[in-house]
Length: 457
Image 1: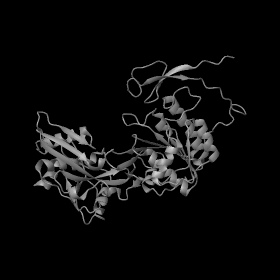
Image 2: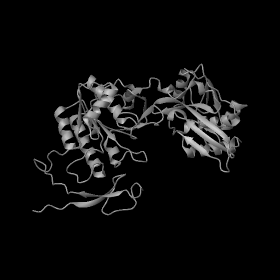
Image 3: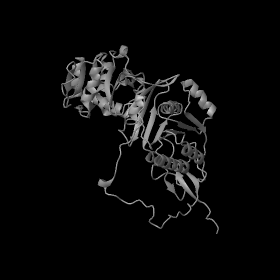
Image 4: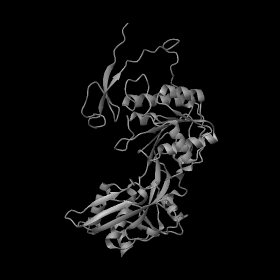
């Protein structure tokens, strides 16, 4: 009997959506020119031994489901331990993404060394580097690697076979875009290869209870390359962020089935590898510049962790007809809105001035709770009067100039008080208990005009 020839499908490289014909624009994700042709072989029919219903999972009442608490592997790297939700869960599949050269392989090699020293053998698979290159990196990081097994291989079948034989405490695949399956007739890194390889690794991790970490490349938009189904298959998605000209790196949890999302861990990239920042709340502060004109400290909340960030502004008369607006670490559209609020509600003229704002240390702020601090920083530089080195500001601004409440205000203020700040500008409706804040003066403000009058008049 002749085998059915392979048929062609077109798959979107961004979201994995498939079509029988080529499309200029993907109807799923809206991107243009992302469809590539892939040959797909029809799967061989599978038979179930023992009849049609043998081995089929049956539904159970939820009350009868037996559950045992996950026996996590605790880590001495406290920042990574917290981001993972309290350690490594056996059988979990974790995806780590980030820009090239940001430190993904360095961080995972240090993690592999810690697990190997503490719990047992670890397999580190590199599809892009030789074992000699891994050895050079390990020497630079001071890793002896007695129980750290390295393998340079791209064939996923061979990788899974080696892992199944060794039964390590942890497996690292660097990277998911570099491995391939022989049965999938497309190049490594394609939509079909990434989807099928991730599915096979997920089955391996769940069946053997071996936690597996995957390294994922990112595309030019900063998202993990390959189909979005990759992020749905894994249990945890971590992004390693940071500016090339700054030594700090932020490991951010975008998805976590075993802990809270939006949790962050802060590291510093040194010649000897990734080093944890002992006091992350103070990491982005520089005492000498806190009292300068145009600088205001904001208490951001990343996951469950308060983080003090210094917001800086520079306002100067424009030399051209059209004033410039530039934002680093803050959304530009948010800056435009705040400038309009200051013009209309606080009567601060900015139409003939260039405005530059910056979140010091390479931090990216996305929460609206930073509105008040950013607006005060701009007003401070425009009026050439400092807000104060011992002052923090937390609050969201509405279009009518009102200061709106923010979540977990008390936790933010407690962290600011611990670090020595003695004055806080907060929304009037913020719920804060006095316990633990006896040394801090709280100024409850209704509007941005009231905040500016308090600080500069």
